[in-house]
Structures are given as structure tokens and as C-alpha cells.
Length: 481
Image (tube, rainbow, N blue to C red; front, side, top):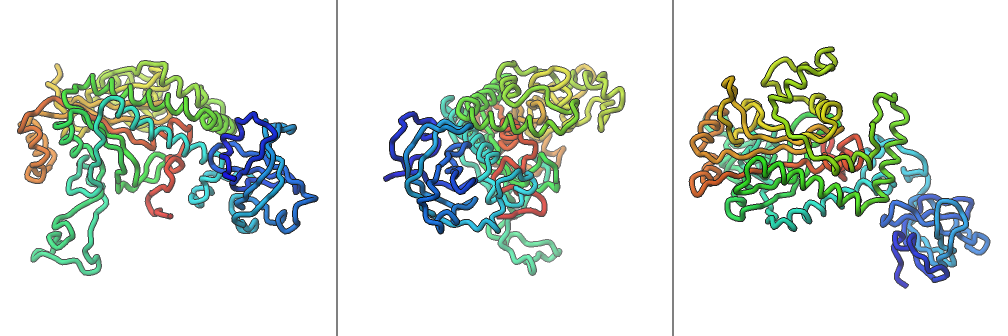
């Protein structure tokens, strides 16, 4: 007989029928009650064993972590906490688990400990919920773009260009690192390397995405990106996933509208398809916050926070106006910000972004028109303002608890302006001829943005460390599994 997934059985009402359950033992109490989980639901099903008529050697092997097959009758449960249970007639052990060595005992484990055994943490309720929500968000991203007639494009993971101009890239090479070939001047000769030039892991699929947008109109990429930034914070990973659409004939307003629509769509989809998981994560967060001082606790619980994003139109405000708000703000005047805002031109920090969202506007915020000097070379330049200050048509979307969720802009389609800006920041035009061709042949206004997928998962699950929302985190000095 084929086994039935636990998720299906927990909602069943046909009592008395014979069923087969396969899964892993979470707990075994009083030699009688097995809590079994097969990953299909965050909840376990209880199987009741007739221990007097079950061989002793089988009972001994029903240990936490063991894989079992239970055949029995589905009955209405008399115990608290579950509606149905299985009255077992037959128990088989599929795979043993040594209780002395199995690290996931039936008790509360810290997230730090679970990170050390990331290959087993999927078996806990918390990570079952987190990765089900991640799965739903991932599917919703594709669903949104496909419904809106976007073409999904795979952009290269190995690249010869640095899209962000930040220079924090992982090098890809097949050269012998102990004895690399060198030119006469002593520099490493990358002509001898596999690709005949210096190559890196990509930091973004945007530049290649723009090429697609100039042919298909609207494209999106959704793939892994890499930053060799030596940052050990709860917000940074060295390998993470990015959602990056690029749209021809889109100006800044269109770009903002699309980004807001995408975020609302995927969060709504997760709420609708993972209600049990999100409820579980909401309760987990409430429990965790009990240990914090009242002032540090969230005003909204997780479900309220997600609905808060859906219910509000995102506030759109220029960088210039935001700086004025921050300059006049209490935390700035009382010197409570770690980075004080005293002048136009400063790069806003997470504390400033969160103040605007959580305290001032009390809704998600889209900041636009940043100073040219602090933004990437490819962003469309505005005409100088009345004070002669140069800004670009950038837009960042800021979320409560997270800070920047989306970074994007209208792209500079004017070839001369783009070349001048590249010369200013030291990007050699000859290496970017392929990119510049989009401005030479049928150039059009176009825009795009990037969403750090893990930040989106972080927000939707209420987790507080980005290492807990990607299956196998890659961070400085850590590439386990």
C-alpha cells in the first residue's frame, strides 16, 4: 500500500480507514506515542503503539531521528493538540538513529547551534517553516513575472565585468596558484588562464539583463550572485540570490510601480499558501521577543507586519527631502544615531532608513533621486538642481526591520553621458563595448531593479539572521557542506 503524506492525513475526516505513514520520529513517549514528521507539514502526526504486542527490539529502535513506516487505522484523537492519530497495527524501522549521537534532541536548540548542523536543521519545525516560505516566495516571483509577460533569462555566473564597480569579487581561475605564469613586468599573465582573461563570479546579472530588455522588452533574471565583502553581519552573505528585472520603455515611475506590485504580490502569495508556517513563525517571534525589553519589541506581530506592507501605498520621497527629515529628527538632534546626518550627500545607513520607515512615515518608503556621487555609473543623470547638485534617477525601497529591500534606477540611455560618467569612475570603455552597443543602436529609456531574495525571505519569515533563510550559508571563513 502506498503511504499517505502527513499533511493530507491531518486534514482527513474518513476515520476507520487503513493508512500507511512514513517519516522520521520526532519523539517517542511512554513506549506508546510516536510523533512522526515527513516534512509535508510543520505538524507531526501521532501514532499510538500497542506496546504489549510490539516486539521489544522494535520498540528499542523507535528513537528520535529514526525513519519509520507505520501501518494502522486513522482515528479521531482523544488527546489534546491533534484531531487525528494513527492506531498502529504494524511498525517497521526503515533507518535507525543512534540516540546517543543524534544532535537534534527533543528540546529547544539555539539558532547558532543549528547553524553548525545546517545539514540537519531542515528537520526542525522552525526551518521546515522557513524553507516552505522561501519555496513559496521563489515560485511567486516566477508566477508574477510570467503573468506579466516577462522573459526569464539566465545570465552568466562567470563574468569578466564588475557590474557594481565595487571590486569585491571572487576570482575564477584554473592557474596554478603556487606557480602562476607571469608577464615580463611580473604581473600574472591571465592570457594563459582558462578564459584567456581575468574572470570573476558575478555580483549582478543586470548588465547582461539590459541586453535582453533591448530585444524582448521585459526580462527578469533570478539567480545566485556573489560578493567577496568581508562582512560578518546578520544582513550579509557571500553567496545569495537576486531577482533582477530590466524593462525597455520604463521610466522611474514605472519602475517603482512594478517593484511595489512585485513585493505585494509575492508576500500575499506566501500568506495565502503558507498560513500554518507563517502562524508558527509569528508565535516563534513573539516567544523570542518576550526576553527583550518592551521598548525593543516590534509594535506589530509577523502577520500584522506582512499585512501592513500589503495595506499601505509605499511612501515616495526624494533623497533631498529625506535628508531634511533626518536632520530635524530627534535621534539626530540628540546624537542618538551612530552616524549623524549633517549634510546633503551622505550615504544613508540602515538606522536612517529604518527611522524613515518605522518612526516617521510608518509605512514602506521609496527613496528617489540620490546624489550622483554615491550611486553606480549606469544610473540616469538628472539635470542639476537649483543649488547645482547632481542627482541620479535611482530608487531604493525601504522596509521595516530590514532597511533596503530593493535597489534600482532608470538607466542612463544617453551614450555621451554614460561614457563621461564611466571615464569619471575609471571604467575602461573598451571592456564594455558590448554594453555600450545598447546605447548606440536604437537606444530607449529603460529601467530595472534588484531584490536581494534572502532579505525578502528574512522579512516574510520574521527571522533575524540572514544565515537562517538560505539552506547553506556562505560567509567569511565559512563554506561548510
